[in-house]
Picture (spheres, rainbow, N blue to C red):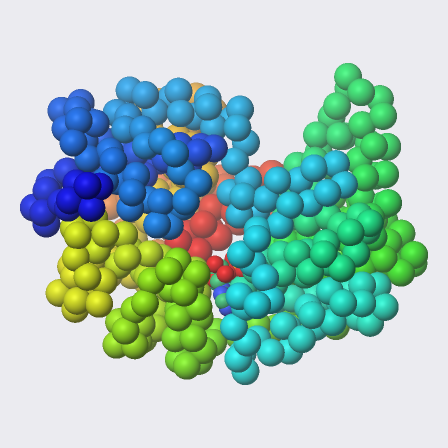
Length: 443
Ligand code: ADP
Ligand code: MG
């Protein structure tokens, strides 16, 4: 019965479902934004079950679909703060000593090819002999190439083989935030002591995306001592980054530490490996896609597995939605129709603005609008700075001014120069600029 309900015509898809903007996943709810109340009502009354069914293909844990309108957005922000979504850590919950690893991120599910064989071998080796063979293990490579997957695979394997060991996976951001919170926790005089003890008593510490230690001198110092203590006690340290140690902007002594063990890079996989990865992902979802569909995806996206998966998911969920066959090339082409724009490499003002809004959680109208409170002005200036910096001469200051609600070009110049200066003076501003920039490029 659900089968027949799950059919939506292409027109209905375009008119209603494709108009919804995903806001986020909060616990087991997927929140979608509808531009008008009318659209919300139509979707609420007719399409929620279908959307849920298709969402479950990719996110089986989603129980509820909630359609909201612009007016509800502020409340979503509040909910989000309470829930504290571990977005970058891919749904990892960290308990006191016990990390929970993503169960699908195993060695068995990791396809090994020329581009990642050294990294995969290093990861396996420490998962079997922690603290004995290579220390630290430093995995580096571009976005979406499997660093986090490998770290979780190590975690899953270690937890099975050494159930009594204290293993911790933490994203660099989490570590930074925890450190800062402990530093400022005036209510608890033991906060810093507890923080230190927590990390220094571990048997295995995995820290993901250590490039985010850049410009955070206080946390670098803390990490230096944590590292030394663990290292001297033969405890295993595993680090990942989007670049090799020598290119991370951190203190020399920490760079040297990071580079003392084995450094393994992960390169974009070749076509065959990409297809093999897609096949594996299909199997896991219980779908069989023909090689021509898989090659189409693997040829379109060459250097980011996460994006490749995104395209695969899109084809599967679209075909479920319209009740079609994911191996039908017409369905595939329909599913990918809007994809080209979304994943194009050309960065525009819109991209920079969208990334800034997302990062600072402000609305676009506010960012380009007239409000002068600090919460808006700083993001606005950072946004203008990044537009100038990334798009350079290709966009005249006058046009940027127009985009930002008819501001004068001197105002744009002022914002640009101000942030340029602030970056040198303020660690906070510099790292915000860097984070937004990363968001733009990792889109
Ligand atoms: P990174 O941390 O390097 O940005 P992730 O580890 O998050 O990348 O990987 C992105 C996605 O690609 C994940 O879903 C992961 O399972 C998948 N992936 C990457 N490399 C492989 C591989 N060799 N085999 C199977 N899946 C992979
Ligand atoms: Mg990662």
